[in-house]
Image (cartoon, rainbow, N blue to C red; front, side, top):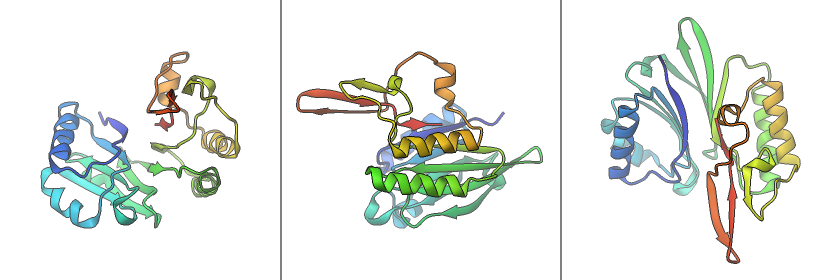
Length: 205
């Protein structure tokens, strides 16, 4: 069985942290990991490759910012093929061949600003058009419902949200966690602003 997960690591530049992470995914027998916000550069990737007994495919951002990656264990590494990455470290597409079926796997990290996020989702929508067996994981920086917001922050159906819904509907994909936890609330992003806690679930798989 192939287990796939998505993880916003919010920086994984410490070698010890990377070693610990590799140990965790090994213990949990996770086959393929989609990473976001790696903050890697090529030199760092070269320095950690020997620590992971598998294949690391990555798209590093500029100045050690952004960054997405796909890690495939020994069983999967020869079945993973690089297809495309953007120039900003926000989008990475690989394919995975299993039992004569080709899966399209995308790890992405959406921009923070509304305007940039709208354009990014327009690109993702066009890129994934008519794509079969699609698996997307990432930091979308966009909530999908009121359940994905906490504190005094409210869910807003803005243009990025509408574009993201189009991607979901057009590709017949769904939020796995929400499908299994219909009415639950959990948050992947938190901060305190003006002495008020703001919380959102903006990372999906």
